[in-house]
Length: 226
Ligand SMILES: [Zn+2]
Image (cartoon, rainbow, N blue to C red; front, side, top):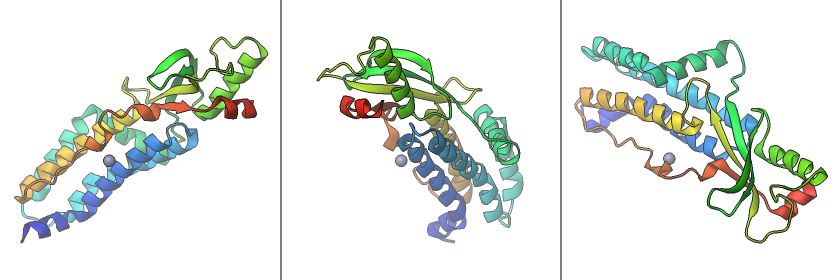
C-alpha cells in the first residue's frame, strides 16, 4: 500500500478534522453574534467528537489496530479537555441548549485594546452590538462617562468580549484550538502506526490573533441606532 493509500484510508477522519478547523475560524468570525458562535461551537464539538469513531471504522480491519487504538482512545478520554468537551457535546445532543458564559468590556478603543472600558456581564444570548447600543442609551440618558457618543476622532466605540465554558478559565476559541491540536496528536500517532509520515496539523493560521474579540462601530452608526 502506498503512502497516498494510507492517507486515503483515514480520509474521512482527516476530512472531519479539517471541518472542525473550519468551524474554529467561523467562531472567530461570528464572535459577536450570540446565536451564531453558539451554533458554530456545536458543530465544532460534533466534528471533533466524530474523529476517533471515523478512525476506528476506517482501520477496523487493519491487523492489530483495534487494541492499539483502544488505548489511544483511553488517553483521549483521560484528557480533561477532550473528555469535558465530549460530555458537553452529549449535553447538547440529549438535553439542552449550551450557553457558554460571556463577559465583556464596553467602552472606546484606539485600536490597541480598550482605552476606556466598563466591565459588564453580557447575556450569552445578546449580540455585542446590542450590548453596545444598550450601554450607549444609558450614557445618553445620564452621563457619557465612557465617551461612547462624545465626538472624538481618535477612538471608536467598542466591545471587548470574552466567551468561556464554565469548567475552564481559557477563552472559548483558544480552548477549542487546544482541543483540536490534542486531537491532531492522536491522528499523528495513527499515521505513525500506519507507517507514514504524519501530515502537518497546525493552527499557525491563528497565531497572535486575538483581534476577533474586539467589536467596533463608528459613532455615527451608533448614534443612528440608539
Ligand atoms: Zn486555519
